Length: 338
Image (cartoon, rainbow, N blue to C red):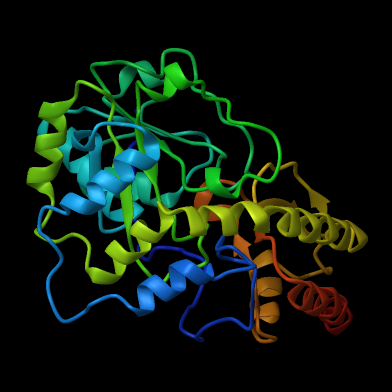
């Protein structure tokens, strides 16, 4: 077992103390967004009254979208909110440890640390087990390890990037998906990450655990804007827009990979709308210094150290203007450091 120490501050992509980056490669939001029908739905949302506290219509829409029973749908304020909630449930059930993939989103470990749950070396030893596919930060297939799925454990599959898959196919078959808690966060695919909303598809036959997770949730975990986002996500217009947008993202990704390779960076394979790369750093300059220099020019990349992958950056696929800015800025920084 490995004890996890809570981070002094959490590392995320997107806006920071310097504001919204002009060219943001650090957040995996859809570069071609926002999705017009989803944006319109959010803008037209009624903020003058509470949503239905039971979210009856929304649950039915999401259930129909996934072809499951409505009682299998749980709503969450965000993926991170559910990460902490399901970790709390694991602790309530007497969990002794949590298992994480080798590289993973920092909130999994942060939530474990908040509940003083150590990390297990193998899935069989943990009562809460995480997977993410396509994986983050690599964007690669991540099939379940041997012994991962267990009816006695809480097994959660983070599917944040499945809607933004640009190549390959899921390593999870339908039978495997029925055994896990599927966590969905459509705001990335819709290019609306400022709207916090998520949901979970529970495995069949887990009504008792669903009720326990509902009991751990605050009233109205979603406001009107989150409801509007998820309703739009389950609609035909948003799904058609997303499907039509993926070829453009593939083209942008191919160009961005070529750009990074032209800078001498080593790029890792990825099926998603992002990839990891190891930059060639100017002599005497650390990765943190190089990223800080880019940030002064309005460009933000994500250091993957918080995922457990050191010496690399994660880049979301960006529009051509952002790519051009990175292509110009990196050699300038190298020359200034020489």
